[in-house]
Image (cartoon, rainbow, N blue to C red; front, side, top):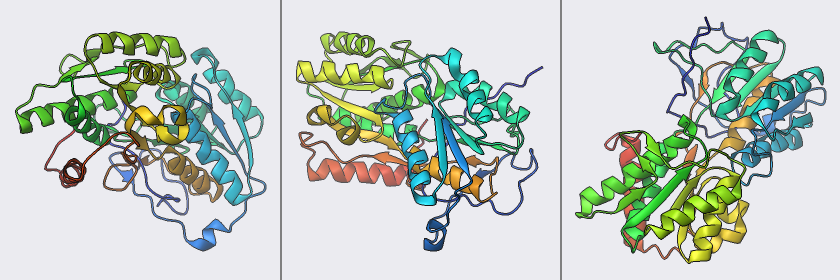
Length: 367
């Protein structure tokens, strides 16, 4: 019987190379460990791997989603540019394509394959087990059973991100800036890598309420019931726009979409209604600049750096199955700069920094 894998809620990165060195570890050696990345030395950046082929399979949102696929692809492109590698990619438009797309890159003689997204977890594990001579990494997935045993084979590394932490800060910011006392969030699918954002956001709003004696309401996600608003797609911008419009009609003046390209519809709805929004995965003022004027900030995670690190490790023969974690503490996740119209005063900005420090110290528990 296949063991059940679960996503680990700790996460990301902050550098250019993994700590694992030398020969590959045994499959079960890293049961309860996580890798701690370190910066590459200048001499490493000069290394070239012209015979090494790094490859990537996107989730169904495609590589131009202005979100996590696009940011992950930047990690591949950066590695190729810096280290003189070959590359190939396979863009998915539907989950039914995942297995075939991975196999196509195996057939193309890729030395390392990064898959992007929680939904590719099962297919990536199967292909990694069947192709021990190919190194794999997967964004937004970790392979552990209920006892904390690492189920990933030695040639497969999970790259995960504790986005609940910066989402907490975003929730506090949204509550502080809301004029209506109502904010909204929605997801693409009810899966851990989506709801981790929504939970952190709702907890940040709750913390603001408790600290300030307010009652700002969150539409779209109930932390206790694990139920909320979802588009059931990452591709349909119209679906995201519809959900956001409904929340705006219910009083929400700040929208927090966690839905890839579908979430862009939420930004459009906010812009049309003269409301604010918060983007995810990457700095929306860069990746979706047309909406920058309505963004308070963005919850970002350094997927590009994590992907580049995993590729470089594979090229050097140093792939590990230890979980690659990123947090506020190591800089793997965070908030982007405040938007040009966010009007965040010095007092609120200092408060956000104070909350960040308390999350890092463990005084505030998130997730």
